[in-house]
Image (cartoon, rainbow, N blue to C red; front, side):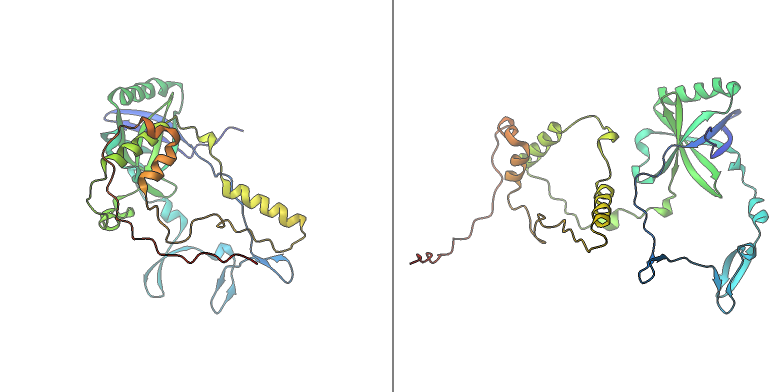
Length: 291
């Protein structure tokens, strides 16, 4: 069965309207779902919708309400919410065109594929796609979908285009409040050269198929092990080989060289970074010989 579009409407560019359909570009990845279980009986815990002083209620009796003051709600029927008029419900008007790098990655939220709705729309769709590609621009506008209005970006992707919902500015925490404690000191040039060499050594083309969810794999192994052991407690300590809390890399130069293997010999020879003067070694008592 063909996938159902998440949205049908039109992209509007000035006086040009292009009928399109939007489909989800992603899906849920591998995951392990747990249920809450009543241990004495081994049965799953379930929840009921209840009203204080009344008890369980029928789902048909539940409506959406907005709390305007403590305990006072304005109740809205689904038809009233659906009737809210937004021009962006069926039209994505591209109001800005910005460079690829102008939108910080932190604003991108969720991608969708955009395709022409029919053969008649294909010509205008292709024109817009190739014009965006030639200009190296991203179209920006607003779109109502799934009961919300989103800021979205539109850019070419192969034969089609990708629409990405963007976060509003008030949904993003200001980075300055987190980064202000980081000092302005410049890194040592030798260390910078070694780090650049390490990056160049590991440079490559991103292939998402090379990565998989190791946590899910480990959980599956644990579940299978527990099933075979018939419920016995199994504790695996993944931190056995982890460095002790508070440990630090004392000699960053040595650590970078070790990461590079033999590549550090190819790095330009420069004045080594200054190191802190080592404290004198303490005298130790020689071990006694066993009789």
